[in-house]
Image 1: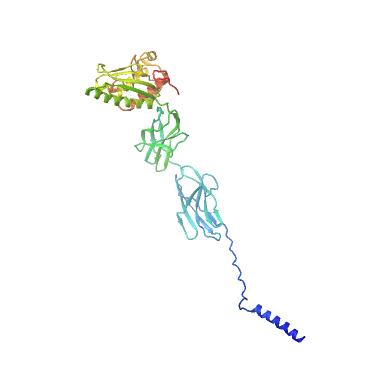
Image 2: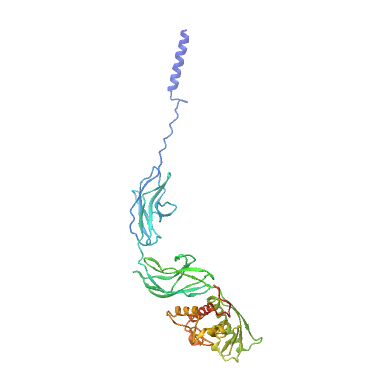
Length: 409
């Protein structure tokens, strides 16, 4: 019995000693480290300052990083409240040791209210500061005096405007901008005038589509930004379709070859003017006939040019084309001339716009009309005379002149 009790005591002693031993197999498993909690950063938005027409200075301060490294900070901006990084985002320009930073807000529009917040990104996500708002300064607006818009073709148009004041800063760029929708800006189509400062200028719009409505505004740029005039809407005309046959000798003499060369330039130039500034549809025949004193034509499209080099030019070509369209060669024409004055409303209305006057009428007789009828070389002072001739022909077609196709919208 004593031997049995001794065995029990010895066994318990061994178990105790083993459990207390630091030897092999007696090491305890170390505890895992406790993970620190990560939260969104705490950030505030600083006051907005140095506000101009196109930019402002802003900033913020990261007060607490949220237990994680801040990987990005900056400003977000929008024209609607509570902007996010999905709106416009600006990076930092400077960062200080206390967590504060600054950002430059650029590309803004004048006289516009914006909302802005600072933001900070860490492992927990995106934190935003308090929202502030500000309004950009107003431009010292340039002002315009707008002439009627009437120089309209099928693929191009011109508009004369006058810049009357620069808004307090010198104008460094001026021109026209246009689009298919209202209120076009210089981000749309634009043409830049060669001049600067205040004054009158004529802008050209090219690459237009026929029979299409457009909106156009004059613009002027100065140190304060861009000023725009009010909208003007216009519609391009149908493209003209003037074609020709040039009848030439099979074995031309040197004199004929020289005349052909001059007449070729004249007819090709005339086709360009007619097809771009009228919607006339006509086929004509060009003939060199030395016996003709000057030049002549009929409303069927037959044209003859004599040996006088002074008539083998664009001015005479357009004048004779007018006859093929029906001026001076149709009963309609003679019925429109009463007391030496043309009685069509549309053409006379256009003449008043061209001459910036009221109450004037086109003068005419059984064969010719003026001004801009191109009856003599002396009547041409610039290429605008060719343009005005074609524009007036288009309005005469609108009045009823139909030897080159009936006018349609």
